[in-house]
Image (cartoon, rainbow, N blue to C red; front, side, top):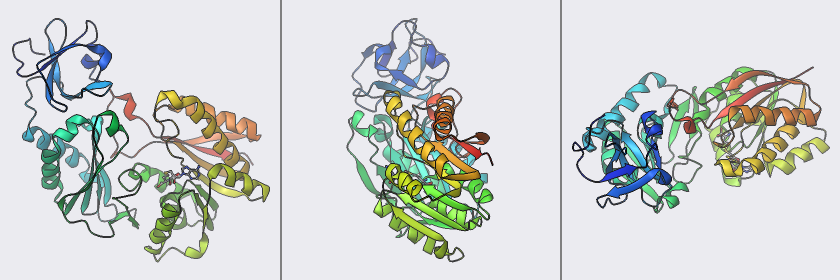
Length: 403
Ligand code: SAH
């Protein structure tokens, strides 16, 4: 760590004691930690972070309208933040994922924000297309450098921007969707475990697909043989196709979005080896539909529950906990004795220990004798920096209902 004087440009001075998290390599500076800013940085400009004793702690992107006032690019304040910096970080992230892709797996998260040293930057590869999501003032400031570096590192024929995450509003940024480099093919197709999927990169959820569930779809595929399955919150049917490929006798898939269900049937049609006669699609609200299934005395051997983010932040945890408990309770009631439930939460506000408690409460209320026989997380292309627990959002349990 360098002493003052080494720093050029604007300086963000921290309040006494507030440099601790930076010393532990946590990449966010909250507004309450800021004593003052010397200079007049524009949103996204690079500032040097300085402790009260004059030690500089790194270089960060300034974000005046967000509670997260600065996001660290580098913990070494001598690092120039320029095009070459982004090239190097992006090449490093892309290289780390080379072994995770081959002809059977052409979908991959290439950049996972803070955990790849690039706060506010997400990049997902779908075949020859890379979808970029920028969600912080700093990432926005470096859009061109990032797009060029991604093009260079991947050889993608198209870089498509999908910067419409809600957090952009907090950063004072407008949504931006459109082609940045090359031309967008229609459809955008890729392969996961040998199955063909389409990603609706312009309008779908996230960047068009839930790549983070890749390993868990493989697990479900391995468990599906001979089982009748229910896929709740199925979106575009990724778990459905995995279960069918694994030999499920029948898969019922439920989602409230007609568009998602339509895309799911297209995904199924893109895989002629899978029998569409084994798939049932149901449009409806999960909470009400699971009750109706119960009233109709329906039951299943394998249930996948992958709801949307009920608690994006800690503030919504209580309400979210009730929602998670409710769907898990109904799923456990619909499960046959000896049946399996793969249940997930992608809420940052609900950690693994709370999630386990919620599912335990659901089992108790459902009168189900159940055990945890496996645990799920995101694939290796979604790394979590040890110093950044906020990155640990996806957790799941494999539950077995006693015979
Ligand atoms: N399991 C999916 C991702 C699920 S995303 C995959 O692997 O691709 C969450 C899905 O839940 C979205 O498709 C959304 O349309 C759906 N959804 C949200 N609220 C719902 C509700 N109350 N009932 C049913 N579906 C809902």
